[in-house]
Image (cartoon, rainbow, N blue to C red; front, top):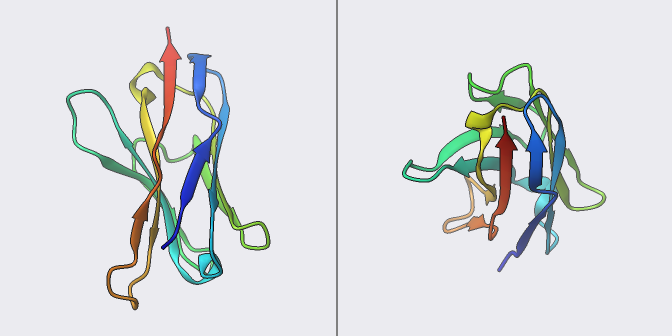
Length: 118
């Protein structure tokens, strides 16, 4: 069992910045794909960004150039640096841990609210 705990959400004005963190339990953090997803009211959960165990990153088009995903394997922590925030970035942000080799290894955090005001 892996526990993921997000932090760093809050209220920010448009154009501002926030950094989200996701701390993972266990010893497998460095071996799995880590991702950030978000879900706005009335919408489906969508991928924001993910990062492979080797550091390869992928971003949704809507956040490219504004958000940066990173990981610190020594601290079992995933980060999402968000800049130039827009009201449409308002959502609950979730951390995900996924293994493509270990069946059933797909864990989610409880989410952290990000609200961007105009």
